[in-house]
Structures are given as structure tokens and as C-alpha cells.
Image (tube, rainbow, N blue to C red):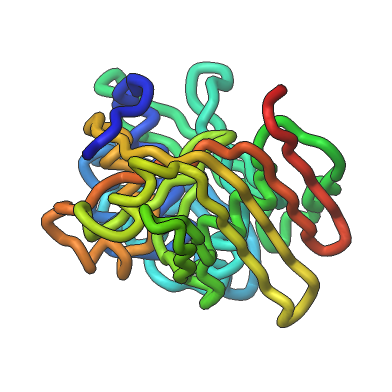
Amino acid sequence: MTIAGPAVSVPNRRALGVEYLVKALSTGEQSAANRLAPFLAPDVVYDTNSQPGVFPIGRTVFSGRAVVLARVSGQWPVTFGFARLGWSEPFAEDDGLRVVTSGAITLDIRFNAEDEINHVYLDGGVGSGKTAPVPVGGAVEETPLLVKGLINHARANDTPMVVTYVDELNVPHSSYRGSTAVISPRQISLWIRDAEHGLAAAIVKNPFVTLVYGDMRTSFVMVSVNGEAHIATDPETRRRAYELPIESEQNHDLERKGVAVIVDVLDMAAFVSGVRFTISRPS
């Protein structure tokens, strides 16, 4: 019943280490810190101005693997703010990698000869004086970082996305799904624990699904996605679909017996704090 998606290359050691670093920073989860540990050099340095986020704010340097691990994970005052950000995929910058966000935060990461992270520079946080870029709405080709942050943090924010699919009897089913994550610019992943029934079985015959996110508590936020879903079997996509959601979702399926469902975004409408984004169906 499985359908394989396009081939996915395995990330290099540097990119994987940065992925775990971002997850630890933006969630505080112990599982992310555990995965990050082998990617840190023993003499790693973390130069930051907003972590742990306690006053007085100023640049602080933490040194050594154990000390840095303790400072890039855990629930610090800034962790919830980091979680709400959309974090970019790492890209080459000088001789290292850089990550930008939907806010003012940037990360610059350097590596040693063994591709271990040996220097992390966080800028743009509390006390830096830097402001977040002003989002520009309208038609876009990729999921904006601002929207990515909402989707990836939906379950932790107690606003999980609702996913609707149609079964073989043409009966629609809607349910909250806590494992949604933006896995690529026009794809959303879900980890589905039941590999044989429900959504996983239905999309083999009818791949079209709808995902909806809403949060009206502080400002009007709405994201609606129509997409075409398939089950991915390649190990790297399965790894990311499982590890991107929050730790509590992963703990429902410690043996990873579920399936990775990938939703190719056909169209999207998002309204976030007065800014509207749209992705149109491919012609």
C-alpha cells in the first residue's frame, strides 16, 4: 500500500548537526540535545546575546560541550519565542553555515576538520536592538518562514492543525494532527502511527487532503492548505517526518512503526497578523 516519493539525498554531517541545534534551541527538548551531542566539538563555543534570556541582557560566551548543551536546550525565558519563529534550512555562508528566521534571530555556525560544530554565534535576540524583517505578503512560491513557524509549533502551542481526508466510501474525516511540520518549501510532513488504516490507507486511493490552522486568541491567524499526499519510504524522509514534530508526538511511537506522509502543497492561503500570503496551484 505504500507509495514512494522522489529520491531524497541524505544530509551531510554539518547540515544534520545544525538541524539538531535548531531543534534544541527552539524547543528545549532533551531528545534534540541528545541527538545534537555527537555533532558538537569538545571545545565548542556558543556566543549569544539572548540565551538563556535572563537579565541583564548582554553577550555571553559558553564553552565546552556539556556547558553548551545545557544552554542550547531546556526551557529558558526565550524558548517559547524561539519556537514561534520559522527557521530556515542552513545555507553556506563564508566557511560555515547560516540559519535565518522569520524574526531578528540569526545563527552562524562554524565547524572543525571533523565537521563537528565548534562555534555558534547567535545574533538578533533580546537586547540586540535588531528588529525582525517586515513580512511582505501576496503571492509566493514557497511557504513563508512566518507560516512555517506556526505550522511547526502548532501542537506545542495547543493549536494543532486539522487534517481532512476522504475514505474509500467518499466519507470525509477530520482530526487534529500533532505531527505536522514544513519539511520542504512546498511540502508538509505528518508522522502517522497507524500505518494500515485511516489516513494512511485512504490516501492511496484518494491523495487529496486539506489542512487548516487557526489561532484567534491574540490576533487573527489562519492557514489553509490543499494538497496531494503520499507515503514516503526513503529513510531520510522518514527520519525527518518523525524527528521534526515535538518530543511528545515522537514518544507515541518510540519504535517508529508508523509511516511518513508527505503533502505536496497545491495551494495555500494564510493570514497572519494582518498579512496575507497565497500559494497558487501549479498551472
